Amino acid sequence: MIDKSTSANLDRIFDEMYNLISAASRIPLTDKIIVEESDLAEILDDLKEAIPREVKSAAKLLEEQKAIVNKAHEDADNIVLQAKTEADRILEIAKSEAERLVRQEEVVQQAQAFADDVKSVAERNAQEVKEEADAYAERVKMDVLQYADDMLAYLSGNLQSALQGLNDNRGSVNEERRKLAAPQQSEYFGDELPEDEEEK
Image (cartoon, rainbow, N blue to C red; front, side, top):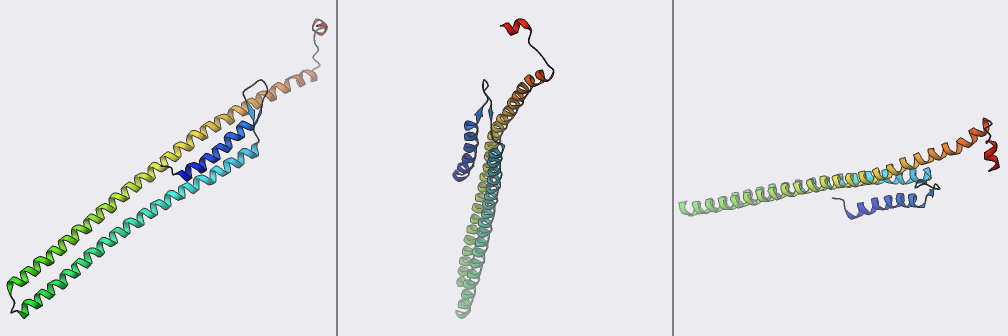
């Protein structure tokens, strides 16, 4: 989902857009407004800069998640390697001790069983670490996808509202231009009011 800093940044940009619309000059006798193109362009530029920053944040989060997973797998491999090394060391000590005691079979078997237990426990621990790392990676991936979906939905709703306002504003401006041009065209063609209208 979208974090607080992202939401605040985008909210600030859309607040500026709404403020621009609120402060715009209104066309008399209509619910239409006129906004400065340069002011609107500046706000849209800020919006275009904000979106890539949030996309980069999502990419950075994925890289961090990947590093955590790789570190967990590396730690698990090290645990297994250390366990195997320790098991081999214990086994060698047991064999040496058994040879010193004229190869007492019971001592060797006990050492072998202990070494196998150490190895088995280490492998189970390593598997648990890997499974936890994979589960964490999946959760982070789902969070990032949800974050992207929330951000796109948020931007889509606000942009559609802003664009609809601009289209309405453009239509109003064109309508006013046609109204202002109509009397001038009448003067060019020498239109005169009827006498009864002039007396009124």
